[in-house]
Image 1 (tube, rainbow, N blue to C red):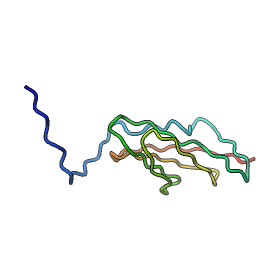
Image 2: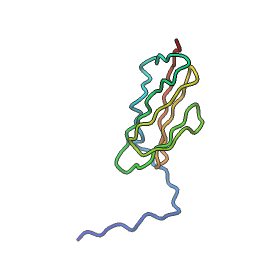
Image 3: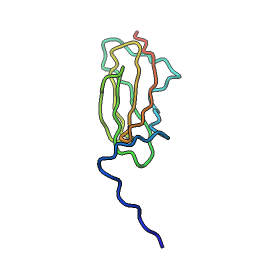
Image 4: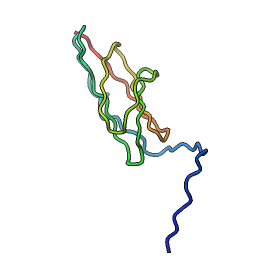
Length: 103
C-alpha cells in the first residue's frame, strides 16, 4: 500500500539548497558589445527544475523583474560591469558577473 505524505505546512520557511537556477544567458565567458545610445538588449534566461514556477532577477543587487521559470526577459544595460542574479521561488540563487563594452 502507498500512503501520500501530508501536505507541506503553509508556515514552513525551509530553504532548498541543492540545485537552483542555472543562468543560460548571459554568459560570463563573453564580453558584450553594445552600441551606445541604442535600445540594444541582453537576454536573461535561466533553467530550473520542474518544481520551480517563478524566477526573480536582480541586477547589481537591485530587483529587476519577476517572471515565470524559463521565460525570456530582456535587459537594456546602462553600466559597464553587471552582477546578474536569478533567485527561484524555493530561495535558491545563482549569480554571474558580465562586462559590457560600449562602442
